[in-house]
Length: 241
Ligand code: F6R
Image (cartoon, rainbow, N blue to C red):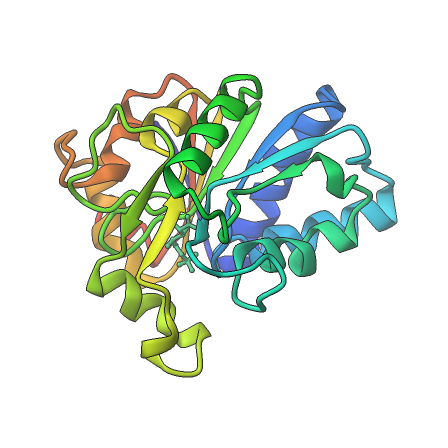
């Protein structure tokens, strides 16, 4: 894994734009694997600014998102579909018809997982963006998830529910389940870009970069990817330097 340590969140977001933009400039119809959460917000703001000011175009791009809360409609303000529209898609020239995410309201959840995995088979990500959970999860693949997993439904752990509750009015409102791309779907990406910032991620970053490759630390699988870059700030890197 290539590791780039930068000073702070803004420098991480600037470096991330450089890497993402290079993919889109080289291949205007690239498939971008995208993530939600606080970590990529700076990157998304940079992509919007760069699209407006420099004309970098996403018109032909197709996107696949990592995960979605089970039970939330795409218009619910905490759904990841809503997050993507408001934090990125509405600010760039991507065609919304070319954006993909699991359907949180799907009645047959197993069938929805199967549909999404088969969609991913046809849409290999040219780049997959990832954040990392404080417990080492990537997407919603919690510790213990099989390395050969495809899209599946997960019961969120207490630590993830707690981490995410800051975005909801009260902790009881956080959905207990989510759809997530599996680790196998993520590892199929041609290139992976992981972003991490803040001291709260330092242990997870250590496990991902220097720990044993084990299903107990889902992000450790990334050590096996041939083209994975971690861009993190000094606080998140404190245990690996
Ligand atoms: C988001 C996702 C999660 C987050 C992770 C970090 O689509 O799949 O794995 O990347 O929970 O979240 P933040 O960025 O909020 O610290």
